[in-house]
Length: 174
Image (cartoon, rainbow, N blue to C red):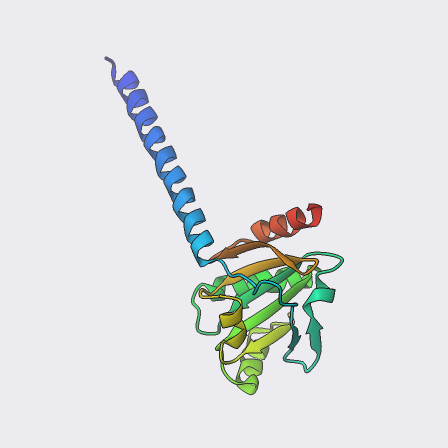
């Protein structure tokens, strides 16, 4: 066997192992997403949420014509520091976005943090985690996509801008 054919065989073996590891990672990630996925209470209408700017957000109405991305984040969440600018950009690009700040301080403290970071997306302050408990949100960041009042997609952890746009586009089709 030549050195070249030996390298080719080694490369094939490593490629095969890499594919198996990738498949395993996808399976584990999917299982974790299913296990940690938020769920709205069965049969209860979507609530109206008081936003930081003092307005009320009617989730049923907001999700009627196009999918609504609800982004659960927290000021103390390390991963949220990466995902929050992505969600802010989606909002600035005209996507239908509402965020929920989980246990991130009283309204004044949260507003200071939002202003310091230059965030403009609409935010509900879930100061004590009551909404998160009702919706079974146990992980930040969490993303829910609601269409016509029903959850059509959820994911937890880091998600990219293109990934979230794809989820919103997919929900628009359904």
